[in-house]
Amino acid sequence: MQTTWGWLPAIYLFLGGLGAGALMVAAIFEFFGERYQSDFCPTALVGATVPGPLVILGTILLIFDLGAGLREPWRIFYMFTHFSSVMTWGVWLLTFFIPVSLVYGFLEVLDTFPAARDWLRGRRWLHWTKFLWNLPLRRTKRVFAGIGLGLAIGVAIYTGILLSAVGPAIPFWSTPAFPGLHIPLMPFLFLASAFSTGESLTVDLMATLFVDGRIPRGRRVHLIHLAVITAEALLISHLLIHAFGEGGAAAEAARQIALGQHSLVFWVFVILLAIIFPFVGHLYAAGLGRHLKPSGISSGISILFSGLFLRYLILVGGIHAFL
Amino acid sequence: MSRFRKSRWVVIPVALILVLGVISVGLLLEPALQALMAQPAPTPTPELLNYRAPQSVECIYCHVSEADLRVALGPDADISRLLILPDEVYSLHGRLGCVTCHGGNGYTRDVSVAHQGLVPNPSDYREAARVCLHCHTDLRTDIPEKYLHTPHERILRGIREGWEVCACSNCHGPVAHGVEPIGSHEGLAAYCIDCHTARNVPPERLKCYGCHISPHDIELDCETCHRSVSTWAQVRLAVHPMELTGGHAGISCFVCHEKPAFRTISGYTCKDCHQRPHDFGDDNCERCHTPEGWSQ
Image (cartoon, rainbow over all chains, first blue to last red; front, top):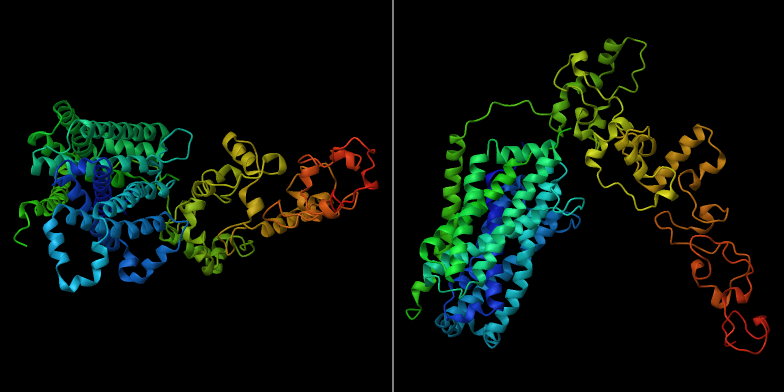
């Protein structure tokens, strides 16, 4: 069993996925007009402002996890130039994602709080930024939402690509998405999980807590979340079934997760909390057209827990290939 | 600032606190849940991939010492193949450790125990699938099988189906023992030709045809036309039955010839390639036109 990656990488993979997923939801709200159904949209506000800090925190943890990089930080800069490495792709994605998400968050704050915009505009020490205040706020925000959406998808799938690239040393992580094709499953699973956790924070929790589930209107967003939860369930099933069928280290990893040492964590924190519980909650919300406090809060919290534990289990469940 | 609707600001810190709370509770819950699970007794699992040199540490004690090897094998034994120089351990493959490729037991100095399950030649076709191919999964297969005497596809098929095929080291040379594996075309060519020469293979197998099979229907040395060992496309016109000048000078071989055969044009007259666009005159185009262009 691999012992190199444990809780710390699980936390920064979770923070990266959650930040990316939250920004995806905010950008989708921006483009489909959900953001402007009301002057205050907690989903968009959290989805735009929280990804920056979360991903920054995740990046700091990542640097702590880099033994040599922590002792000799200048070596991190070499990671920018090794273009055949998945790590380098990730470093560049984060390099662009963090500032774009911070700017997008700042613009969303200005849009949500006009008084803050007026206050900043009136500061003499910010007079040199006068030309920026003349830009159309919502159009500029939409540009950053678009760029952020693309980068968020990249950040969400990159963590899965990183893990699958470790194969064939850990065959469980390089399970293919389609039999016979060398397209790994992990990026798809991490993308689905990122979107699900992002939506749980911004829609299930924030919109339920702060506007009583009145945002989003209608059942469309809840149905989309149901589809994502279903996709996640199918991907997890495929991952385990393929691993059992492959035999060797992959099957042993799947056995440890589903039936062995980690099975309680898996069935409680992943299957029950990520799939069954939120599925019922979202079925209820989709039928009603909105989340009530019990369904929104319980679904949101359970999906956040499951996103963290899914990554942790995938990491600690990995077993080195047998020689 | 007082005009700001403070309750709305709360959304952002609440979201961040929720996320941090989930992580903190998760960190507390996981060990508790694990404690509830009956910890299974360690089950015998297959040997893990030993990527670290320390696991081969006992091998080094004997194999770097000529005196120890002599004691173990006798004063007249040929120990050159078994003696490892300390520097060799730090080569690319050497750092994987002896047992990674050779098996055996690197934790003991007992000769018989240490050599149980030893694989003397890990690149042998019977072992390569287990050893070399474990890491080298992306073998180059872009040259079609019909144009190489020993293509990777055939070797992989042979390993899979258990035929006797050549070993990885037959072409790529030894690894780890003070040498780096041969990967470049120049290195492979020199290594193959040396081996072919030593085995007195026919002379035509001492050049490109030692490994490559020509797709063309002409008997020329490859290097007569092909100028690069990294791409077949870089060629020069070396021989041609008729002089190619003017408009003919710059065109690719396969504009006129069928690919890959060359003998698809027999006459080398204008009408073999060109159609007469006018009714007057005959097929002797050269009476009026020159190769510089039809307008000339």
